[in-house]
Image (cartoon, rainbow, N blue to C red; front, side, top):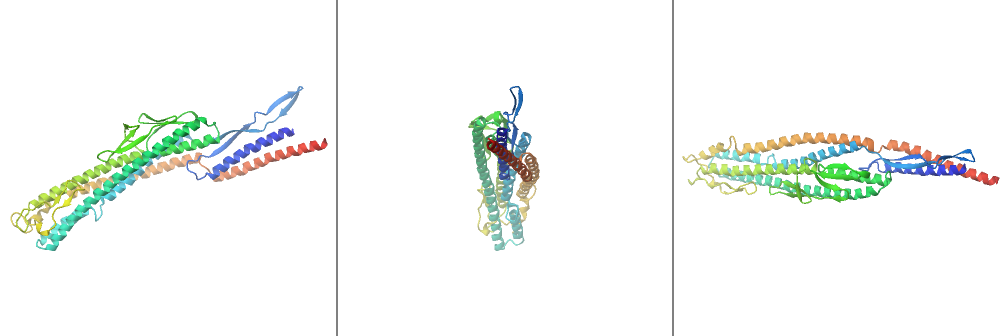
Length: 443
């Protein structure tokens, strides 16, 4: 009997020591990202058996065995969290760059739109007193400020394009690193014993790598033997077993982005942070194209208006501006005497009064208002979308956390319960030892 007690007590202390280790691991990693709660399952020892010696029934007990280390998770909730993370990655990425482009467009007092209005107001003020040299100087200064504003806006959008490309390269590098990590994890998962602590840790690492990938692009995920994972994108294999395939990203001539897999062009991601960057690059190109078109119209309209007038010397007005886009836009004149204020019929302010010809329907000002309105509407819609995706992601992660996360109150209660069981098993060993001692004393 004492032998049975030693075996039972020893097996119990071993099992409950493992359970204490799992609980301690949970408590220590309560705030660790991508950690899934652990628990230990036990089963009746296979050594327990009923025997008959000399036809006399005997009963022996073998105690308890550790069955496996459990990792709390729900594949459906994990997949949902990955999907919501992909959507959130897209809107967050687009929000950042659409906000930067809005800043570059600068619809404030120092932006193109307001400075255009100030410049035209300067023309109207000069029309009231065309002989005032200070008003002419002020008007030329106002024209230069418009030119500078075009430059600043173009530079801001160009900087955004460069930043988008840099972010895309960094995100693609992160995806490649995570895919390579998954290849290593796949190899180790095939070697890991099912139900072991090592397997649970590898599965945590697997899910962490999947999160890094799916928040950046919409990848198809499939699970295989032992928890291994296979990845594909657009029908092409990205990861199979321990063999990863690398992505690369490049800028097109118009500063939009192109994605390749193992050197072969693939379609742009529809979502994820990389998908958001691809969409942002397209919007940045469109805004810069519109800005350049407005700059070209500004040169054409203002030069045509000025050419209709006459300077104080009776000479036809020359070009006010040069350039074909926002970056190359430049003010040509610098002397107020070169302003063609007169009309061809000799009125001193005739051409100045005719400035309204470039301010009607289809004018530069109207074009600028359109670009600001279009981008503002886009950003407003994106803000609402980002709020919705953030809420969905929070809900998905909370649902997953309820299943796989650590509840410190529950762990504390389990800790006390298992400690008592461990102490009970230690007491069994003590009783067995005392029994043996008593038998030896009798002998």
